[in-house]
Amino acid sequence: MTTATKNLFSNSQDFVSFSAGQVIFQEGDLGKVMYAIIEGEVNVLVAGKVIDTVKAGDILGEMALIDTSPRSATAIPKTDCKVVPISRRHFTFLIQHTPNFALEVMQIMANRLRNMNAQLESRETRKILKNYNSY
Image (tube, rainbow, N blue to C red; front, side):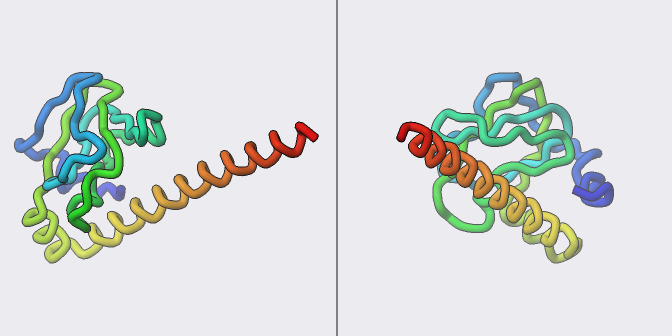
């Protein structure tokens, strides 16, 4: 995120603290908020495997505000952390008053999708090579 966007949340007094290992949200939960991380690191897991680690200045759980599907991942702090919950109403306000925020959220989602595709492609390539080497 840009410094300007980070500043939207860095001074917020509406933060929630989580201890390392404490679940922020679980895969399959219905999501009503996304989170801006203002301190710490959070592991993102799918099917129990860490697929990403997000840090202070990043956002987490943004898909919950884009669609109404259940959470696609679990978020567990790697370190003690502070996060600012952002409701759909607050999200809409931010987009209306800070249009670049919407672009940044879309860029984050696109980067995460590209990273996931790369991970899947890498696994598939390893599987193909393993099968090829067994001939």
